[in-house]
Image (tube, rainbow, N blue to C red; front, side):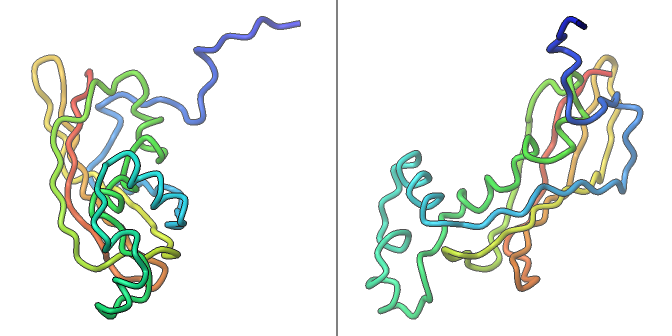
Length: 155
């Protein structure tokens, strides 16, 4: 019987910095913003504004359901949930920069579709920086969040 090697247990083949190309697109699985996601984010963030959990308050303001925190939407763009981070493998050193815009509300029950497009690969002496454009659309095709993220990688 073969001996199990946990270092060989990978979901995607790893790629080095030089093997990535500007224009490549990586998609994370879709995620529906359930009441459980809202409760977990509220507990983790401590944000208790009624716009995130009080349906009567939201109805008075004309909203159809609970509204997601901006960061609750943004965390759907964690590359660790996409093939990109797995392909970066051990070359990934760390997450070094992020910017975002919140363009449309996200409500409880919405399904989000995160995507990452490599926009820049800057080679340095011993490391490289990969920059990706981030987009998050909802089930209706509305762009609800966009921005960029940068990652430091070993060469």
